Every structure is written in structure tokens, then in C-alpha cells.
Length: 364
Image 1 (cartoon, one colour):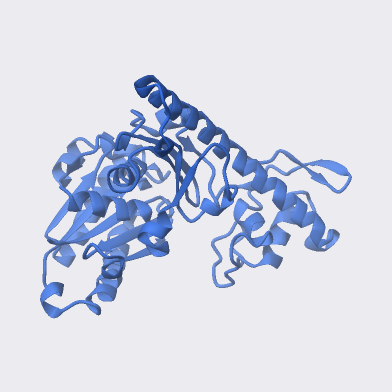
Image 2: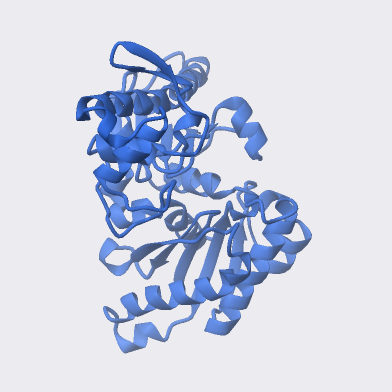
């Protein structure tokens, strides 16, 4: 079997997964911050760099014979939505061109691209018929889980920017949606994540002590600041991918949150920032839970209509993405909870769509 690298090329991050074998120890994953809207012309260079790092990590654990086997790339994307592109098709073609450029430089044997129609296509077809490739990473992840992990259930994948809520029925994706518009309309795409969502998109006002205060409609803070203050996300002093470009520490998070109500960090005690952070996270959870409830009811109806009885398998909740800890520990209405990280490892779980396309391509 050829070695496979799966890629999930997003608008803010590049995620990759090397599938060298069936055991987790034979594989590796990585994630790189890459703001597509700022650096679209650097994409090929970044892919070469990331692939080289990934290959180096794997080659150290392989025999020399295995390291010479051909490498294939399987690619999915959402980066075409970046506002540096005129439209989605232009973005897809740009990404396809940069992927093939990087692959040529590295001597990759074959490159294929995944679409929401469940097909892999080569670069020529991707350029001529780009529409199915747009924002297809959710479909790849849902398909891989339905085939290899849980044929009936509800996948909830919470990333840094968005949440996918995807029904799985009979070993297949349970929605016919093909575009983000379709998915927003049916609530299989919730535009809330665990890191990049601005606070002002979640709350219009908040209880501050005895007062009810309108929040500023500015990008002063994100949900990540609330998560850090509540200790639901770790501090990372060396990471400055924040609203103000300053470190991801609790003190800086509180200072950013204070700006949302026209204050400085020192104007109130820690209890105020704790309560404000709780309100922010609660506001983020509500639309996710609403979408989960809507789709759980839909899945139940499918099985009631088909069999007149509901199997416990249909109440399995599959959690993936690095924001899954936002949800309650025991969500209502589900008999079983499966954490993808326990199946494929924490590292691969953070790069789950890249794992998915590699897994799907290995079965073609």
C-alpha cells in the first residue's frame, strides 16, 4: 500500500495526516497556522515545508525500504472561502494549483481532491468542475466515521471557527446538503467555534454584577479568551493569534474581555470576568445544542419510520475536534458517546478531516 498524506486546507489553518499503516503508532498528524487571506501566494511553500516536516517525523520510525515507497496526497479544503479570492471557484483553482505545485516539487506520485459528492478527482477535473470541492471537509469526516466507526449516530465536530452537526444513517452521511448555504439553512453547520468566534457575535449584552450591560460591537475579544479565563483551554504565552495580537494568557484574556464592556482589567474583580466568561460560553453552546436536538429528532424519525422501533445505535453521539469539551459531559438524549480522539488519538483528532480523506482514499 502506498503511503498517504491527507490534507485539510482551511482559511486559517493547514492540517495534515500521514497514513503509513493501520496502527496509530505508524501515523502522524500536524497543524500549522496559515491565514489564507493574508498569504495566499505562500501556500505551495507552506505545503512543502509542512510535508517535509511530516515526512521527516515518519521516516525516523520506518525502515529504509518503507521510506522509499510512493507517496500519494488526498486533499479536502475550506480555504476557498477566504476573502482574498473573488469567489469559491477561483479559490479552489488557486488551492489546486498550489497543491499540485508543492506535490511536483516533492515528487508526490498522485494527488486527488475530495468533493461533497463523495468522489475523489484529479487536478484537471478539479479545475474544470470545482463546485463539489467547496467546503467538503465535513463530508469527508462524516463519511469516514460512518464507514469505519459508527454507521448510525450524530457527529458533532467543534473546531476553532465552526461546528459541524452531521447525521449518520445506515453507514452514510444523512444529509443531502452540498453547500455551506444548504448547511446553514438546515443547521448542519453552526458558525460557532471554540477559539476564533468574536464575543460580539455571541452576546449583545451581559449581566455585570447587578447591572445588565450592552457589549461593544467590536472584535476586542473572542470565545478563546473566555475559555482561557475559565481554564477550559490552556494558556499559551508564545501564541499571539488573538484579537489584539497579544499572548494567550489569563491576564491578557481578562484584559481583552474587559474591553467588551468599556473597562480595564483592574476595574472589576476576577468574579466579574468569570461570570462574563460563563455567559459567553453558554451563548456559544446554545445554537450547537439546538442543532443537535433538531438532528437527533430527525434521526429518531428515520428509524421509527423504517423499523417502528429505535435502536440504541441511533443515539450514539460522536464527538471530534479540539472544541468538543465545550459541550456538557453527559448531553441529554444520547445513550452512547464516542470520542474520536480515543479511536484515532488526540493528535489526529485535531486534524480529523485530513485523517478522514487519508482513510477514505486508502479504501478506494
